[in-house]
Image 1 (cartoon, rainbow, N blue to C red):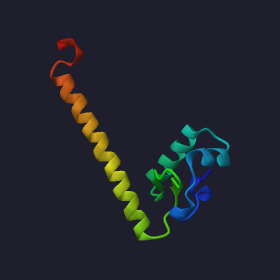
Image 2 (tube, rainbow, N blue to C red):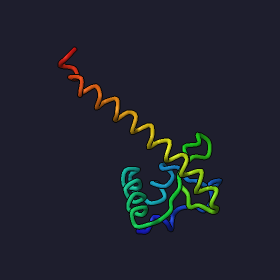
Image 3 (tube, helix red, strand yellow):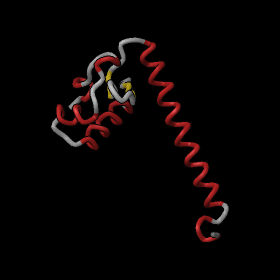
Image 4 (cartoon, helix red, strand yellow):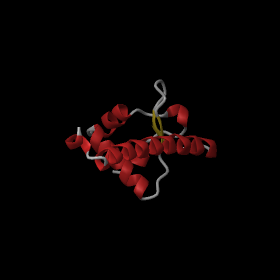
Length: 98
């Protein structure tokens, strides 16, 4: 199954993970794995966390890709900060030093 065939084109047509899983007849976890695999093969699949129109889509314009890149970079930066603080806590002895 090629998940790209099931994704709408354009940010305004984004499909939620729940809707995508129903459309594919699989779990949300399986749908996420299919998206990951397609991205690893080079597919440009964008996503947005917009509470009203959030979801996954194929980009129609360079601007849609740029917005996705900014969104994804922000998530990466947030995750790196969380990792950094957890490592720092463990380096200081973790709970055993409390």
